[in-house]
Image 1 (cartoon, helix red, strand yellow):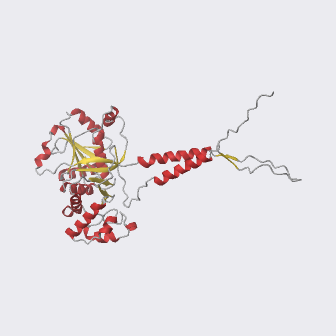
Image 2: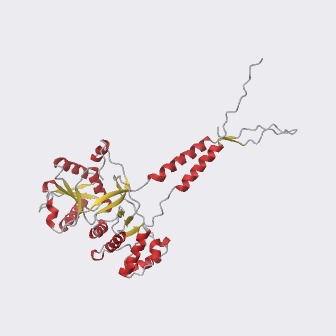
Length: 215
Length: 181
């Protein structure tokens, strides 16, 4: 009797199915990646060792570009509506509320705000716009903006964020801070890129010993 | 492993007179493609959540109506940093002398040593850093100096307005530095 011959089975596994699944998953993740919207205002923020993540709700974002021009962004739709109505009643600007709500940011003096909103969105780029006038301390329009926004928030917490460009000069920053101070807003946050703590420094020693950083 | 077989069947009947053509195996091994696919997936999994900008908190001092309020800090514990043009930093301890003899210059890399030195010499409850930026300094300078505060764990600091005299002094010193180099 011959030895029972074990039928030799092929050891090649057909991997095409796994390949399909892999590409399906890949497509899913590619499509669900949220890309940051193309910045209308080009700003290079400085680096800092701060570890706190910037908030993304109820923010009032003030952007200072490299020429010192100031732009304002609001993210809450209801607040935008209240602000638009307040500006129309107090300053008689005749601003179109719908266009105001649709706008990604505001960067024009009050007198030309209505015409600013008429510019088509692609053309509203930071380098072409005048920005909110702040340099003149007698006519710091940002002051009025913040007062109106603060009233619109009715005492609810709003996150004041400042995004400045590396090359912007101090006077623009100072004017923005003065607008905050005039409205009694003592706390605000500056958006920066994360950076690792330099080794050997005091802060590094603090984190190495496990103590929590004071924010 | 993963492979595609495109040899198309080797069992042709050979016609008379046809040379015997050698059918080379055309098996394509797809394992590297699957590896790359998974690498890309892992990349996207990790990058969708990781790049959030961080925020640096700053608290402003309440505007003091009386100038005496500003000098309440004990003089021996105060070091004032002035930010000038072209990433220069000047500093002096205590009050500014009439002859400005204690007005020294540095830059962003050297200032850490100065701060650590001051920190080691002063008891913690007296140590206050006063930051003043001239009109020629940039936003980056301000953020960098605030970062230095965090890096050196200096808890008491304040960003205040620069006086005309100091602004002039900074301007002259920057010009001197530039001429001297």
